[in-house]
Image 1 (spheres, rainbow, N blue to C red):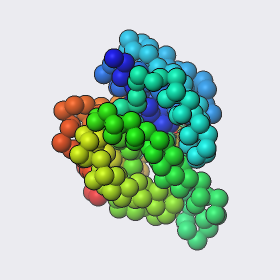
Image 2: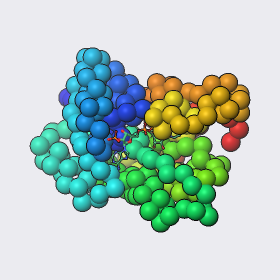
Image 3: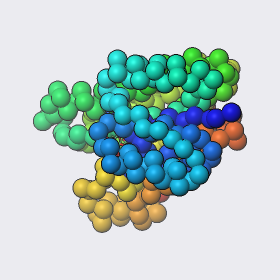
Image 4: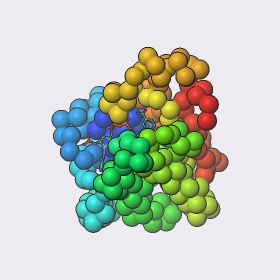
Length: 243
Ligand code: NAP
């Protein structure tokens, strides 16, 4: 039977690497993104090069009604299948000191990370619980563990996701649905493109930024049957950066 995985924010960066990893594990990959059609198509192409298939699921995860409509339509057209792996990866940053932060900067980051998690996860839970197998993996951040200055909004979103992960894991464990979070440090993507890498890498014991594929490797493991007894965990992947 076809196995389905959904990756939010799958058009670029870490999300794309996760789509490719899951394709290599035999998943049909549903690639969600917000507006970058060309990049999403490039991800789909890369999924196909792995010998798997996938489809684009363009939808803004901040829009609960639109997400619910998209997922219901998908479920109706796939009565025999269900999304057994969900990777909540969509996220944005809008850094600013709290002193200067606007309500929009606060709300948009929380809406994407934290509310997006609820909008996508809630409709998919029922099938995972009924079929007694599911994997929910959320990409959080070092920022959500230790807090980083200039990121009160982002730290709040990621910290909230960590707490939600721990709570949800306890609700679903008996039905073999595991819920975990992966907390990267600095990874080479568009999100970190503007940062001063030479300065920052001196703080990292490994002496370098990580690659999206390294994060995808961990996500692939958590999605695999081998990770069946790991739940409610937050696993850091940051080259030894002290947390
Ligand atoms: P990225 O390169 O900026 O890509 C962000 C992805 O999220 C894109 O696919 C984007 O779609 C999608 N997205 C953004 N807002 C969305 C929305 N409202 N609805 C649907 N999709 C949306 O980011 P990244 O660096 O790969 O980060 C991925 C995740 O890892 C994020 O949750 C981020 O917070 C986390 N993270 C990253 C790092 C790092 O160093 N890079 C470190 C720690 C945690 P479009 O292409 O359509 O815009």
